[in-house]
Structure formats: C-alpha cells, structure tokens
Amino acid sequence: MAIAAQERAPQKTRKRGVRRIDQVREIFRDYMRSNQLRQTPERFAVLEEVYTSEDHFDADELYMRLKVKGVQVSRATVYNTLDLLQSSSLVKRHQFGQNQSKYEAAWSFRQHDHLICTDCDEVFEFCDPRIQGIQEMVEEIFKFKIESHSLHMYGSCRREDCENK
Ligand SMILES: [Zn+2]
Ligand SMILES: [Zn+2]
Image (tube, rainbow, N blue to C red; front, side, top):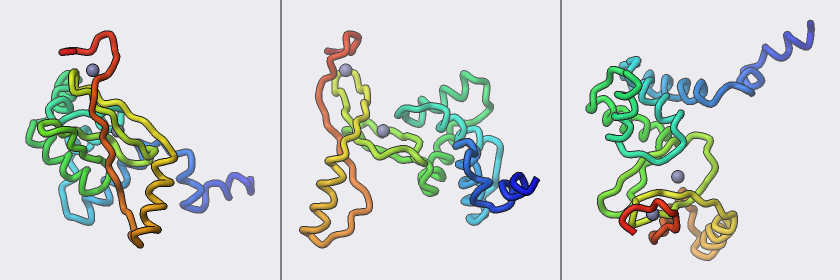
C-alpha cells in the first residue's frame, strides 16, 4: 500500500512512462494557455498527426493526410498550427534545397542530420556521434556556445524506385 501511494505522489515520478503523445499534448496546451490562444480540437488533431507520422513532411502533405483520415480541418489551420508548433519547439522546420521546406516532430527525438536525394526528394536521416565531437571542438576553439546546427547532404540515393534518376 505504502509503495503504491509513493508511486503516485510526486509529479516527477508520475510522468515517467507517460506516452509521448500525452506529453507533447501537455506542452502544447501550456504553450497555448500562456499565449492566450484558443485550444481547439483542430489544433490538437494537427499535433497528433505530426507525432504519429515519423517522417519529414510539408504542410500540404500533412493537410492531405488529415483529410484522408476524415479530420475536418482547413488548410489555413494546418499552416497556422504548424507555426504554433514551431514556436513551441514541438516541430522543427527544415529548408531542404530552395523549394523544399519540410517539417518533423521535434520533441524527444534523437539528434540527427539529413541526406536529401535531389532526384526523388526523399529525405534520409543519419546519426553520427562524431558530429557532436566536432561541435564541442569548434565551441572550444571559437569560444562560442552552439545552440543548434543543421547539416544537409545532397546527392542521389541508390534506391531501385528512385524517381527521375
Ligand atoms: Zn532518390
Ligand atoms: Zn529528420
């Protein structure tokens, strides 16, 4: 009995094991509350779709996915919500090449960098701890505090079904 009570008591302990989607929903709720924004079901639907898809997407793709699922949401709401999610650091926006801007879920995802195929526009992720090492070295040399970095590598993928190869 005592153990069960202890497990439930402190906020920190309670949060462990909570699903990521619940955590991001809470962050988004707090953000909207403190910015006096309306907490609409449409905005939460956009957030949910972002966190169920584990890839890089543009605003129109996201809008289409929601539409296919029968979620009643306007294109304007999708764009507007993506801006809010970006401001609350729940979504990251990448500029891949000149005309390709893509988003991805950002909360509690491991640090990674991108390979972009210029034939089929597919985005691949890679993670190499040595990049962290370079960052630390550069910080030391330049006496500079790095907040973030973006590393995009462009080229051709070798997939069989790569378009425009
Ligand atoms: Zn390709
Ligand atoms: Zn990514």
